[in-house]
Image: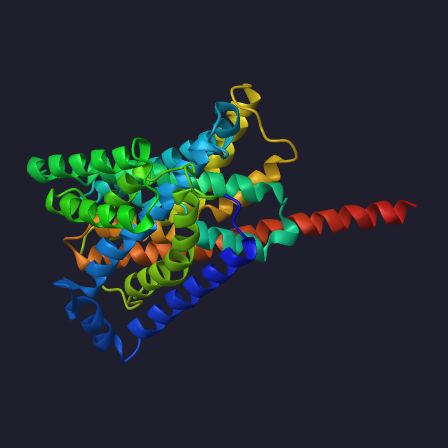
Length: 387
């Protein structure tokens, strides 16, 4: 959780450049070349988009898994008292967006898309926080990070529960055996060799993919097996692996994911019925549902004294952070790829809605900061005039 905010800001800037670059290319005369490279070019028998979304994202989910594990064992999720406030906020930020989406789409064929507006993109969110850092309580950064980590955990659970069909139990049982071997290597034999665990993780990836469970889940499973404390070395495998994975995921995997998955054609014409409901369900779920859910749940539960608001963190700061949390991007795009993998046109609409929500969330944050600063200056000027 002790991420360097400038490091995060740089990675989110790179992410933004890749996103804008993909949008520009996809809406230019180079669209055909872009689509050919992404969908027709094969890496290890996979098209490039599948290679990135299914294989490289394994490392992204491993990094998330390590982040969650570290927080559960040593960080802001290590005790009920520390975890309760951001966890309640995150639950509200998942339930309300899902409800808003379902209100729009309960009578459509797109109902399974409820999982698209429930996520927060850590890299983008921290980047936007850094832009507005002079106007937001610095105590809110930790709340935002914890919120995003819990969001990721909930999204992972959704993937495991709702995107698993026709399980091949043979491969799944072998994967469980591999996990047991890795846990024994950690707990009994105290093996602290990173390549050993990475090889075991890649084996898990192959077995999980063959079992018809989404292969990125193997990243989370591997994180469970990684030693969290040092046995013979100065630093634990968990900490060392995180330090090595952070640059790779933030500067290679996520920018590539953004470039491959953000190439949305803005010339949207469709014959699909109810497509406006899908669009507005995602847009309003993220940009309105997220801040509403996070702020409402934390406020009500703290007033009922069921959770304790961290010292120095006011509800205005929580509200500003919850607006930034409406930036779903990476995980939301990942969810839409899983949900509507059978229809490229639907995926395009979802991506357009996610990008619109990112922009709308930033605009809303800017507006509320501007209005608050304006009212504060007016109040100050009024007091000065009275003297």
